[in-house]
Image 1 (cartoon, protein in one colour):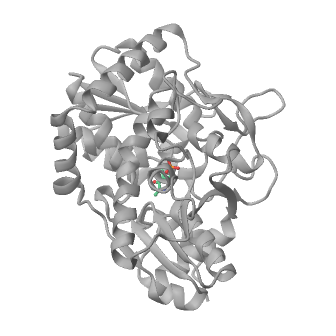
Image 2 (cartoon, protein in one colour):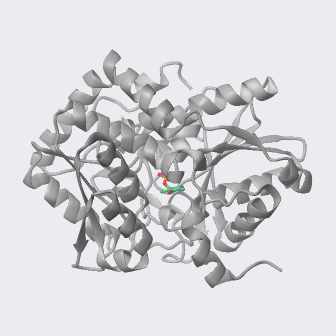
Length: 400
Ligand SMILES: *Cc1c(COP(=O)(O)O)cnc(C)c1O
């Protein structure tokens, strides 16, 4: 890796080698350019950096701890450590970039935050940030998802956000993205679009990564302080890829550290039964940027599935796509069954109920620990599992 990694990637046009960029209509292109220019000026200013630091400490509760899993390590081998993003305010890593995006909106003089949400996690984090800054918040959500994700819809409304039901097409995430972009283009002066992961057109993959870097910077320092060395492996789940980029970015230059991104293998290896974009996909353009994608014969995004709704996206961050090609990160899959087993193992051996998304990373760490019993493994526990408990028990039952 180059010492100037963060200056080299992305390029000025937003490319990570061949991936990324902005394949969008001209109106949107000029808006994205304005946001990019403003981001470069504002995010480097003393006031912005100080305000974000203060928010991280006093509002979000950062730094989140790194925790050594004694009982889990005894059972599976290895030395397993967790970066506890589940203890971040709102219970997941998403608030890291939502607070950054909302602070940028404030500096830009915007009045309204607009976004789509699938399972509702991004919507809740953004509604939280909007409440903090006194901004309006409009969340577009497919009608199907609204009925599936009732508690998150209620949370958004309690926090003061407007939830806009999307009633056309399949009434899920893809239509919600289109609807949110449309709403944003009606008033780009007063509003800003806030993407929920390291995806979408430039500058979002770069901005969201930068706002998530705090996870890796903290974790590397904490791990060094606890053990005097670096971990042999770092592991994170990959949906769009924001929690993974946050952790990985701090270790890219450490050649002795192996890096693993874990994709959802779902219920089978057939198209439509998983969301393992990099394991089974091919490069293509989706939602305005180039990345590995899962597509049908017509080049349309394919339906995807995972037991963890936060991971079911038919694309992935452009930076991950590059890191796969240059072989700095290894991407692999964990299926639903392995994910549920890990969910219960962490709950019962450590008293920590993980999000189903994060359980994919935990499951992979358990495999690594068994395979390399002398090694140390640092896992990003991206979120807590309270949102998943009823679904898991109703669908899979309690373990014997
Ligand atoms: C949304 C979510 C993810 C997936 O998003 P990434 O951008 O891939 O990090 C992972 N874990 C949790 C807890 C989430 O809420």
